[in-house]
Image 1 (cartoon, rainbow, N blue to C red):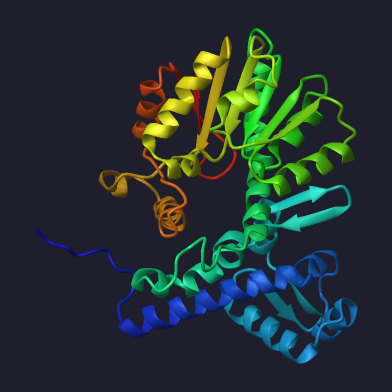
Image 2: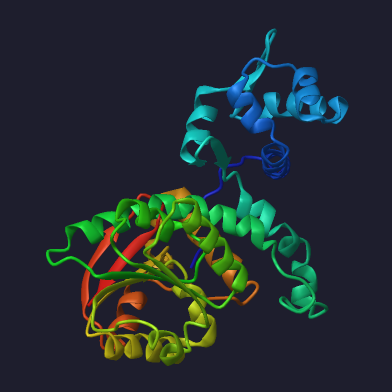
Length: 351
């Protein structure tokens, strides 16, 4: 059997320099965003490197070198005699990956791949050799991972709104498990009279959500700092007789405790709440057998999603059918599957 792969390069040198350029471009896009250059150019197109440096208190020489390079190799940046600005495609990218909080705009430009996981890639050799252990010797940069998920949460929140709104008999409470998507806060804005409950074992995540709820002056929120697997401890604080909608973007991370533990947890949820709907929101792993039936970008995204969780052993990514079987093995009935507005994310609904 042939092991040949389709190759888009005719010469090794093409592959080498293309890969190197993309790697460098990714680093600079991330850094230009974090130094404020991206937002500045959005507000002030046709700016020189000197103008940008003076406004943002940056050093012009390295900034100029980076911008000149990006104007030559990146599809996002352009330079003419008036200064630097974004291409039409660049503007599309920024529109796609932005999140607006009042007067402030945030961009998720490789926050996860470069920002959160940069040190993971650097230490991957040490992980393979056994010289370092993730969680003991180092961790990913969580602040960047959270920012990336927060932008996703805004898009997934639109699907959640539709699910809640389309229910014939209204839900009486909504629960999010693991709090870093920001979606529960957005749902509170859309449904101000519907109680919103968040559960997370990390006090920092609970604190951030509490602040966000205060900013929108919500009085219908309840935040619980506890491990989701301590089911009796946190559900005893709730009215489990109410019609309840529970969702999470992190069931793949809950799987780090094992398939049996998550199956028992889902079974416990069904027994605890008298009228329950569960939404498992995930990027399903694309099976190898489907390689020729999906786009190149979807295949790459799926492979990366598996990598970033399994390399550091913080979760497991399942295929669509595996997610369905997992919930059904817990006694839940599969209702339907929905595409979300976030790329490759699907919502699996169970009763």
